[in-house]
Length: 456
Image (cartoon, rainbow, N blue to C red; front, side, top):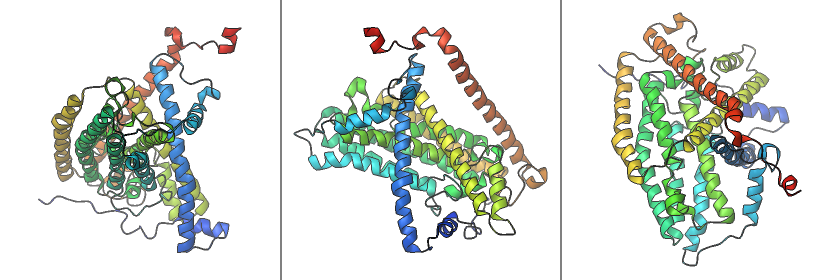
């Protein structure tokens, strides 16, 4: 029996979907054309995306300090700005004014180039993230998920160059660890993506968002048990690809001083850390777009409104689509922020293993497990295929009549969605209870006495 490959449901609609860009050009009086489009693209890259990358890094650094402080029963930054929100800006000013040193024996060209080579791919990855149905900078990438991960993998070249060019044995050890770790974990990372693609039928992140527009039970992570397990594999492998603890062996301060960035200071040091925190958001964006519904809410309301505004007999509703896209951007960023918070939670909870244990976990555990999941997902699609088509356009996601021939898929997705919702609710309730009762059971969480009062 041939394997049933579901057709790409948006292939015939890609040209007819209303685009916000010409409509916005018309409203502000700009003529639509290649030159204007090129200029606007440059403005978007230089303003929105550069600001988003910088903001994700600044907020991520502040958030990690707050999360680690709460886990370690302390307050964290609380002096510079309200709740310490300006601490990252203060650190940025410090790094800008700090002396930029280059070791005497270093390869000066490669040493200076490495931080920018680590930052540039992360910045480029943001251009393909699906912030909204019409809020994606390049929606035509047929292999968008793989493209983002391929671009992010170039970051390892910056890390290797930083370690090799520093003329420091600890930096070289960190660079070699990153090379081994990155190359190893890319394989289960790619296999987990293939497992999700078998259920969805496309790698285009915008199409994936439309396919998950029917509510929680239509999200790819709930298509079958093998895809749900592949999401866990993807998350673990993404921690290793981002050098996040417990896989932060390339910068293990307990063994290698600071690893590959031991010799860096000032602005170049900040570029390396900006790249790490921005990559956390980019990988979380791939997870959200591929597994967790993209810009869609759990009830399918945004998908319903988008379909209604696009297919309006009187013509596409521009202001309605703009509102749907802005809300979708907020939903997408919230999902990414939640995944980044979980990455921070894992870092400050689990201990750091040895490098041989890290590679063993990849080669002997994650890789065979990812292969089993891929075969299981293929068999599942053969005997219990998912419901093809786009919710609200090709079928009604909340009517049994829309699931003719795919009742087994509906039951499976509903059960998995209920289990996932219960798990998230339990985790959120647990964290909320810990925050609410932490002040009573941990006296160290009390506010420290300001310095001026202590001196007086």
